[in-house]
Image: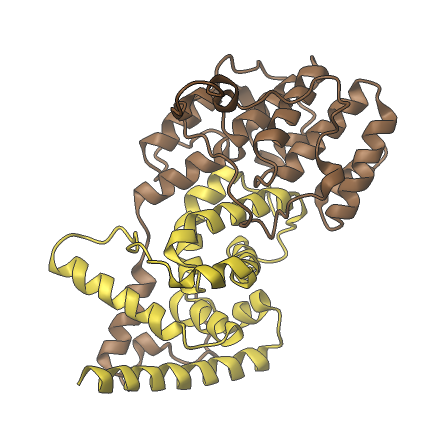
Length: 235
Length: 170
């Protein structure tokens, strides 16, 4: 990208020290690694939709994309629609969690953009189907401390995809999945998405008062969120 | 705009630039993937609002800037600065070329570390990411003249840091 009014870039300017120019060129040429991209693609999971042919991301994300392809076009972000708010027909619920890495919720921290919700956003204990305890906690309470294999648990994105898929046909299951997400990933990166799904599920279950209370808390926690505006819009 | 790009397309075409930019904006290597994840979650949330009035890439840079800035402000980052930094995963080639490239990139990050956030952003976007100055001003959200002033000041500081580093090596 060039503009005739712009000054020469340092890396192109012979007046600058050669070493400085070379360092800047090296910085510009840094394209990261395929392994790093694949890890990032795995973390983002269904948010990315199916893998495009010849995508540069490596095999791990490609395998995930193929699996997600089964969920159909509902996952595709084309047209600018968010998958969580999509009005497409419900896709079949994946029968099993993918053997991708489970990302347990990190310790207090990395989520300023997706700040952890205030307490009211956490699922109420009175919710019909309380979140399941973590298998690792349930199974090993009395036994020797043995970490459960990560493949046994769905990732954040997979849990929410299961919730989204179930939303229309089985909103109770969608709510249960959202609540499980809340229990396992209270400070996850998809907190907003989870709350939107929970609110939509509550509305479908006819639990309007709970839904509106939760929507109100959501709007206060994330006043600038596109989801808040959509939730507030008349159906 | 014809139609909004899919998240997959955005990721495939821009993820490498996002990671690179975050690094140059001062995100530690240990945190780059976490912060890049935040960038794409933010993109996912805001994509319905993207109206194509700016180029997708400049829109993404603006998100990177905000997310990286939020990240750096978090207290735990400051607390953990003393911890050991893992090697930069840049996909460099093996052998001497890799060593030289690695050193050059690490050196640039060291130099950039001497700039404040405003100057650093302008310098990274113009000198490394190759945006025009109009685009830089749009991304950082300042008047064009202010962006020029920041670039001028950032270049001076960069040259001074370079000279110092040469003297230290000598």
